[in-house]
Image (cartoon, rainbow, N blue to C red; front, top):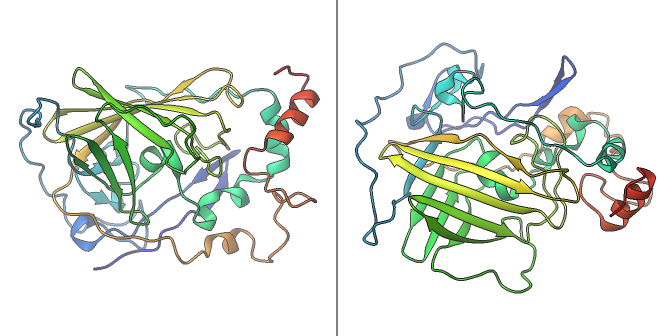
Amino acid sequence: MKRDIGSCVVRAGAALLIGIYFAFAPVYAQIGDISKPGYGAPVKPPPPMPKPTATPRTRGGHPDLSGVWFIGTSGTVDLTAANDISQRRFDPKVTPQAPPSFQPWVALKLKRIGPQDQAEPCLTCEPLGVPGFVIKNPYPIQIIQTDKQLIMLAELDATYRTIWIDGRQHPKDPDPKFNGDSVGHWEGDTLVVDTVAIDTHTWLTGPGGNVIWFPSDVMHVTERMWRPDSNTWMYQVTVEDPKVLTKSWTSAPNHYSIGQVPMGEYYCTNNVDAGLVNPAGRKLPYISADGLDERYFDEDEYQELLKEAGQKK
């Protein structure tokens, strides 16, 4: 099985910092010259998608979301078509997506974080969290659905998350986790997933555009998932975070297609990307004088910056 390097190199260009992820997909799921991701010559066309049929359903009548899901419409990874609509989550011309609207104090926090190209958490292989598990993840995702739970498996770091769909509620005081505590219910043919208690040591950069976006301890995520036909899985997320955002943010509907091959396996292990953007090994700008990692939310700092920005709670 052949894989390329998992990279989170962040490039600066035209006043925009663009995170580039290019994955080593298995040979059977990958097309193109991996030496030039997005620019190589195609080796072969993507395998044809099967003719779509009606939405598969469980014994209880709900849509069955099970399957291996690839970003876009081709059901595979094509490194030679990185900018083609077949490899994209949505077409911004058809479903434009607004950027997040930040509270004024966040601008002061960003100055303390420093350059995005050195601060991006994926440079040090940090977990993506929720909603990043889906919407920031460039790799395939597998869904396994039962009567009681929906399990999401990620090729990236071979990790998983559990969404309970058996009617239970959140625990009264759940411990924070990268993937939070998730419970779902059906609204017609749409699974609505409510997630709370999400660990703050992650970023939402990517879903809301190439801007630094960190969550607070009160972030609340609502995901909507549906399967309009056998070939298609759709995903949309709304983020509420009154400490960081002035209003809730909702993504464009993200399009995934059924894969014709199983997932591969990729672990973020080499940890070389941080060295690429800081070859001299200088003290990282996001580490404060007293040792605070400025990339993430801190309640005491939040209160301090609120006053500095002239904001009230």
